[in-house]
Amino acid sequence: VEATCRRGIWLRQGVVEMDGPVRDVLQGYRQSVEESAVSSFQTNGLVRLVKVETGGQNGDAPKTDGPFTIRLIIESPECRSGMIYLDVSEGTPAPIFLLRRDVPLRSGQTEVQCVIPRIPLPRGRFYLWAGVFDAKGHDLLPWHPAAQFDMSGPDLYDGPHAIPRLAPIHVGAEWELGG
Image (cartoon, rainbow, N blue to C red; front, side, top):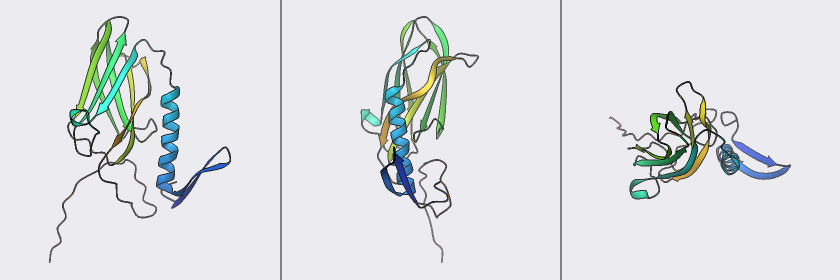
């Protein structure tokens, strides 16, 4: 849609929810879908995600190219091995990037912390998805939206019409003009 349209209209039950630049309307729609998924998700896995915290340096709001910390507390009724997967997205379960870590889970609660030294996301709202799987890929904790967070930093440049952006990654650059 973003590649072929400049303007978008989002209808909710026949009423205009949002009308404007297609990128803004799509972002509003994604946020609505994601907020609904986060608030309605019930886990029934063999382990449980008790707590999720995200933040920048010293627990403040994350900033583009700054450190980003994800802290999880996972509860398991018994000791077991698990693979934790984390994904950051704009709302859908399609990752901008995906992280994985093998973790021994204790009986009771296990705290896991992941630090990304320089997160390459621009200003905006993003979503953290999480899941825990056994060695055969079976769900211990089903893949689900676990948290949302707001980044501060620069906006991405709007691209030319009909050139879609697949992932919102901020890349700093230095330019020189000769002559």
